[in-house]
Length: 423
Image (cartoon, rainbow, N blue to C red; front, side, top):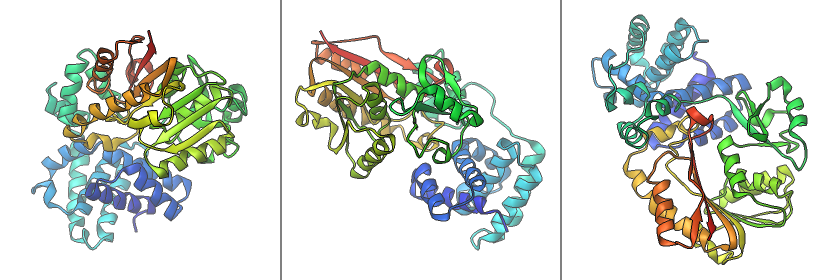
């Protein structure tokens, strides 16, 4: 019989392909339901995320190894073949014979693919013999296969960041490192580093309360249950520092779930003042409440509401407003590989919504206050263009120089930060 993590991985890959469900949500639900041992859970996660992340490259291999078009195979067979290829070419710790053997066993284990076990064996053995092949050249199609992303994204980055597009593509894959922020209400960064020394916690230059550790299950780390830290990328922490909330301030965090920036702001404020963490979805509001309770934060009030009408909560009363708007997520492809399957049309409707949220935040701002607009995308239409429109329509505001963070130069998520203040 094939191993349990591989069986679960196949089920999740089929589910994600058929329903376009998000891999992280599907995986979390499956792991809670099945309660795999930690080693098996880690393998399952690596397989699911890896196959989704490299799907275009894997399918390019299969197109030349199969006699019939790949879409004509059952979804389960496509998942088995992709899983096998991913293990062959991208998981050095798994021997080739084991990758092939397990894949054939997976095919035999399902009535939908049992008759294709021989095909799976032949395709994988041929792939092993010839090795990974890539198209030559620097055109959009070749780079799309090489970096497993849609051609429209290659074209967008080539046009928008002509000196950086190759590096952005190279750094678009998953990074196993995790960034933690010490909960300065309960501990110090030094004490947390000592607690996590077995995890090889390392400081991050420019962020005195942040630590970097290798990937793993966060909830099992020492100090998690005691609320000594929360997970937050360096870019998000820099965003909170740009907002500069002070003790006693009233802060409005729009589109706040799961709450990381609200938590960091509360720590910067020493839990003194008021933070309204607003999110559109009730179930995500609960995530903010649960996170604040774990961290022992009392100044956060999580509410459900539409950020575009944020001024109904605080018409001109907030000292600081953070608009971390919903975006295309092109700066975090390595963390959310499903984003690679987005259609270009899905991006076109975002800037209008983002601008409406920015305006809702502006109308909530008190005189002399600070407004920060942020995204985790690398798309000028969602970043600079939205902010330039805002400045043109509201000349009473001035902006600090826009800041675009890039993985290959800043070591962070791809991120955009704009800071506005009254003139």
